[in-house]
Length: 301
Image 1 (tube, helix red, strand yellow):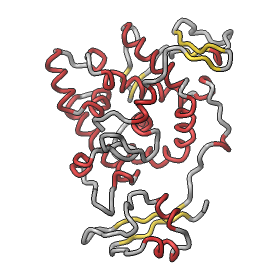
Image 2: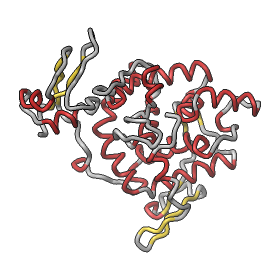
Image 3: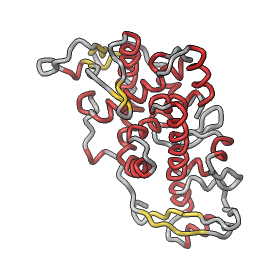
């Protein structure tokens, strides 16, 4: 969070018009009746769209065109968008109940999509994991970051930490949209701009390029991922990444050799680390009096 990530950098490389085969792909907001139009050749803006129930004011010209841009970009980011849809089938069932338990709107799962593409990526600034926490922020939100443990890579714990951030931001700004924007800009950065520009709404703010596009990326991915067929992403269910059944082992003592530990569990070192990416070394040094949940797959290996 509060950084430029690889997912965003990739989207900056896409132009306003793309060619797929011999077909020009472009965006328009005039074709609201798609019954008589081949929508596979166009990217149509929805008539209305909201983030967490907060309606985007598409009657404002620049707001409409900023959404238009992100729809064009993300519909035509074929590899990234396809992978996000595939991964969502596995990881949204993990993220969604955590958001719900914490009273966070379901739309925030799309924030994880634009932050990381639902992968444990590392940014050039050192942010890591699905939610792209920086080390200091991770520790502020009670995640352990040591030589052998980095809970930013634990999707459950990182999602819990992100929820805590969103709650604090919503309490500070009053809207979920500003709370989402602050995840990129920082609470202080958004607050300072609201004061300086004498406005109270994200859509009325003039912000840096990245933060100005941030919420619109979320809206675009939400629209595409909720309506994949409409935008040319009709992926068969069999091609989506399926959830993997696992069991959890409680560990509260050091493990000197994770490869040997993996064999004792009937798996190998690779599988252990794939399912527990928060383990950052060949051994595990535990914090005294702390329990760690080690995920062991029961299928798919």
